[in-house]
Image (cartoon, rainbow, N blue to C red):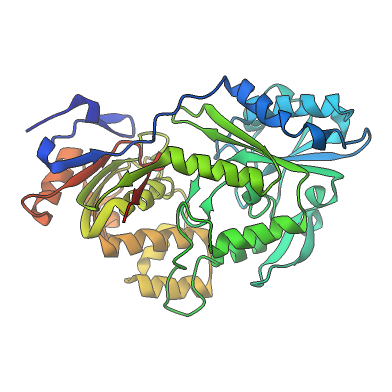
Length: 426
């Protein structure tokens, strides 16, 4: 059987050779090659140059809050935060009047070591505060969106004289893209606001499933994106600074300025760089998350599953390499698979919405539409309960998949599933 060493696929710390004859492979889907136009620091400095006019309006004594992401979302903040603070100092803002708020959403608080990783050389110099979505005393209610999402945000953010949002533009499987307005909602919002905005992913009618526009890479008509936009408009930042990271997590582009325009430019760049145009869908998709830590748990691995499914024919077969050494990524995630069908799970989700339940529904929905063979260390019986077929190795997965495929099947291979979005050109 043919083996191309360039197509060895990662699963955890292992690397599996792909034994697939060339005539079966339509294409190997990777991000578009991108050569950054400078070092990470140069890219950030150039982006901030465009905010010189805004910064000139900052006055000494004003309190400035910078919102940045937690460690689960790499952004290059250890590089860009010191550069941003240097610009603020040059505008007359003292260190003691600057605070960095970590946009945890509903995530856990960060450790001191994680704060150090986030803020780099600013650690111990600039005050760093974790957002707490469950502390009513630290939240301010700003109103409801047009679809009834209550907007409750961090008090420090709401009361700052000047607000700057920072983060990274990425794909997001139902908000379209990360970055920009997402730093506000869910980043520094209450748990109630987070849940309500995420609930927008579902159509209003019971049993009608997910809104068709709430998908990866789409902002137009996306109800989740629109809720986030409305929330951010209630407390608009002075400007934003968003980065784009390459596969090695280094900054390859930076965008700064108006919170809508700069984010839009970042999304367009990201889509052009990380989309892979395809002329047809395939019978088989073999996708790796890219190995550890990208496949540390199933919730993280779901991103690769969601993106790769775009390249697959209805009823097609997906082989997903996702070690999941830390299990599911949430204590209650697997419990949602006690519901036998997507319809039953959706009904339960509408009664008691949880973000992890939404991800479980998305996994189950794909397991019903496709046949998914999962290469992982999860218990076989639990994989079957989720509607997937367990396999211990890539070769074993191919053995399981072949009887499900037509004789002259065609396949896509995706070595880093979390960083490339197949886009069907119709």
